[in-house]
Image (tube, rainbow, N blue to C red; front, side):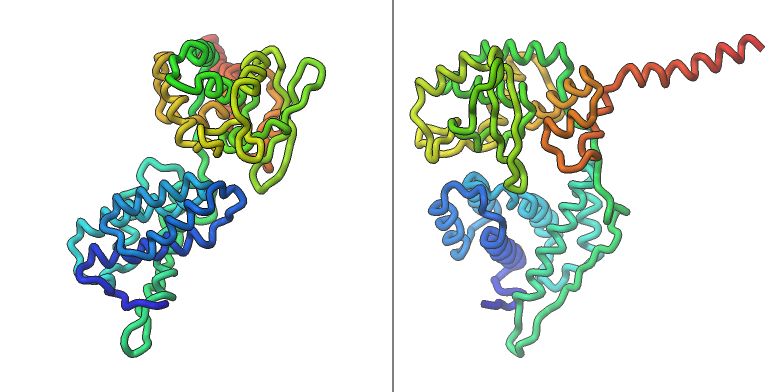
Length: 360
């Protein structure tokens, strides 16, 4: 069903209407391979067909959808939430006042400090949103208002992949963090949370991969536990962790907890999968207890820490690629930033040059 471009009484309500329609369309088209609670998602989509009062209500619905397993929705919604704040502050009176120049101004002001990859995501979200409106609006004469937004080469990043040095813990910080993991006074589910965090730290698996682990995916081989991991693109790989590092927590957790739905190793009291946001919160709690402060305190930093430690200790980029399940070796190369021996060698060159200069 198509709607007039200015279908509500005021600009703010109209913009919110179109964002709601777009989000609803995305929820119906995103990959649902990791969907855990289809009934919850159905209820969110139903709510989006009704009138959403404000952007905060829409934000809550998106978070609810994301927690069902549709994590990709944030790639589209977060930029549009910023766009909503910017455009409603402009005091516009019609959707037709939005043009490419205004959107370029938005991207320039809202993406400062972000990686090139994040900038590309913002551009993609804006293009997708206005491309959707192009196809879904119609006037009384059967004509559509076409934005035809292109944002060609915006910011000089089109076609380039952003690369930012990862946030990670040093070895001394990691020791303090692991002490905090053992000491953290969780109110509930302490054993589960400790095991979950340790598995990520000791193997470098993604948070999503840890949350999909099932009891049947863990077997024993000599002094190791073998973990069968379902990674990105539904591809499987195997990682190992020394039994001595997690055996106590693992056996106690399996013995003391009820099995989750479909045999999930980590689940909430209802037997359903934990959310990535929850895992990030418990990691932040442990970091605070350890007195460690980082720009990004989320659980994904544990994966970066493992990869950095692995490269620092072994100097084998292929090993990093295989351990982390990277499809491309280029993705693994960011962890060579910690090769301090080579950096010292580089620093020595200038010193050697100056010494030679002084001898002349």
